[in-house]
Amino acid sequence: MTSSINTLLASEHIADLRREAAHWTSVAPASTATPDQPIELRLVEAAESGDVHRLAALDEAPEPAGRVLLAIVGGEAVAGLSLGDQRVVANPFRCTRDAIALLRLRAEHLSGSRPRRRGLRRILRPRPV
Image (cartoon, rainbow, N blue to C red):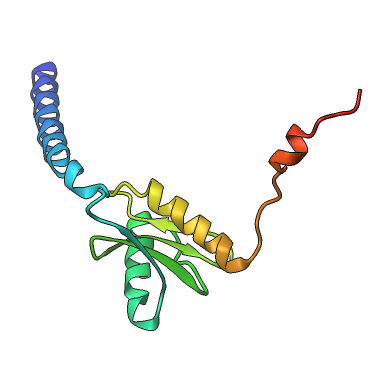
C-alpha cells in the first residue's frame, strides 16, 4: 500500500518539476541581457532605494549600506554594488554576470584605485646577456 502511494506522489512531484522547468525554460531567453538592452549604471538616489531593497530581498542578503551603484537592464534594476564595502546584491532570476562585472569596473573608476598589474613593458623588457 505504501509503495503505491509513494509511486503516485513521486510521479506527481516529477510532473510538477517538469511543468516548472518548462515555464522557466520559456522565460529564460527573454530575461537575459541582449545587445538591444544596454546595461545602464547609475548611483542610487533616495527615490530608488526601493530597488536596492527589492534586490536584497530577492538575493536573500542584507541591504547594502552607503552609496550604491545600480545596474539597470531594460528599465529594471538587476544588480547593485555597495561602494563602501564592495558587497553585491543581484536578482537571482536574471543573468547578471556581465552587469556585476561592469559594476565592479565602474566602482574601481569611481574610487580612483586600480589593482597593481605588471606592465607589458616590464614583462617583455629585453635582458642583457
